[in-house]
Length: 152
Image (cartoon, rainbow, N blue to C red; front, side, top):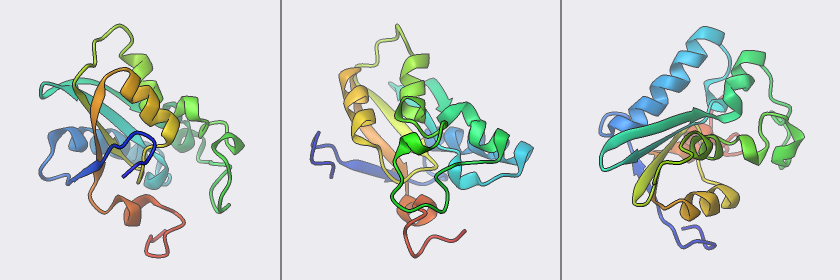
């Protein structure tokens, strides 16, 4: 549970959730075209009333396009150490920006390619009315580069 906002993450699989599958397919498409590190392509999808609203790729997909992240292999580095990892370029923030003018009260967000939502993203999402936060099942093993169980 995130102590700042008292939210609980919910976990879904690609097989049982169409919105997580949309996020995955966007990440996979970018990976297929660049062949660079599927683990650094976070994608956020917002849905409301079981209808797709928006999707956004962290850093506009530039990690994969440039085949580079200045934070890879550097434990504990701040987001600002990479021009594409900065918090305002997180997939969640970009999804909110894309949904400008859309009422998101009661909506849900699905995040593929990461194992948590940062505090600033949670606050921004809460402010716009996002009420449920979904991650891919086993995301901490799949995407946390500092987890000893994560494979390269």
